Amino acid sequence: MSKAAQLDRDAVRIGDLVIGDGLPVVVIGGQDARWLRLRGDGGPPGDGAETARDTPADSSGDGAVAEARARWTGPLLVEPATVADLAAVARHADGVVVGAAWAGDPDLVRAAARLGLPVVLQRGIVPSGRTATLEEWLAAADDCAAEGNEAVVLCESGGRGEPEDAAPDLGLMRAARERTGRPVLAGLGGDGGLADAAVAAGADGLLVGPGAPEEALAAAREAATVMAALVRPDDPETLDAARAAIDRVDAALATLLERRAALAGRIQRLKPVGGFRGRDMDRERRLVAAMARRAPSLGAGLLAPIMNAVIEAGLRLSEERRDGEERR
Image (cartoon, rainbow, N blue to C red):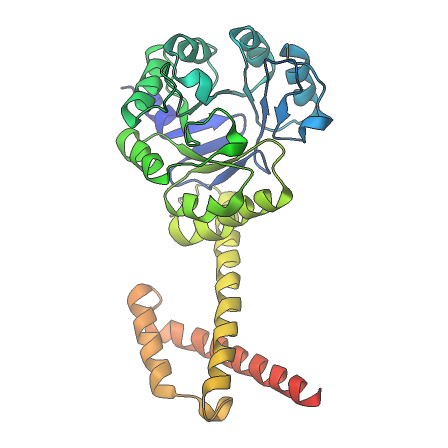
């Protein structure tokens, strides 16, 4: 495999968005990219940029895709309903989504790959009606590669044709990444409840279903920011990318500090002597030593003043709340 092909396999560029290991977790259908899902039944397409009712009722392809392109200048992915839609996808989209109903048909997969656009390949439904196995899913990715298109992103949505009903198999998603090295997405449908788990399982991105409620999008954004900072190593190559990575770590740090403050307040209510008078300096030294083993580059010397400030902030907050309760 050439170096260029290997780069396409490991990190796939869709418009100005790059998806891959060591890169930020993306939210497709949200802040990072939009996607349009064409329908072949004459009804309106589902649009990850807006709700279905805001999209022109054009299932022929070109008008709907052109309209979506006009509304959104960022990365646009389109899931065609039929082979006839591929020409419109090629004219207007930055990537093509091969939905579950298509993914079990090698001829359709190959036709999508021949567009030369990045392919988001859902785990499909085979002709017998069952969901594809891992081997069958990866074979479909190989069909794309056989057409000279290595820019494939694997999407696990439970093998269902309707992404809003998605129930992704996160273990299978992780196995697909480990086997192929390709980027993987978790299809959340309209439920953000699995967003954190998907990121923790190694998802490079989250696909939010058409018309998903704002709560699902918010959960996906939070997982891509906070959970990713906790479990995903970053390797930024530019100043802006490094600052963005710092922002994600700071968001996770703020979330943990808020949780720590709440737990510290509970401890103050349980201790016989609370507040600054009840500080246990031996325990604090043990705490710093334990943290130093996890952060050896900082060491106990640098961590001690940081943790002292954190502990004192928690104690002051606890006293302020206690004083407020007493005044009431």
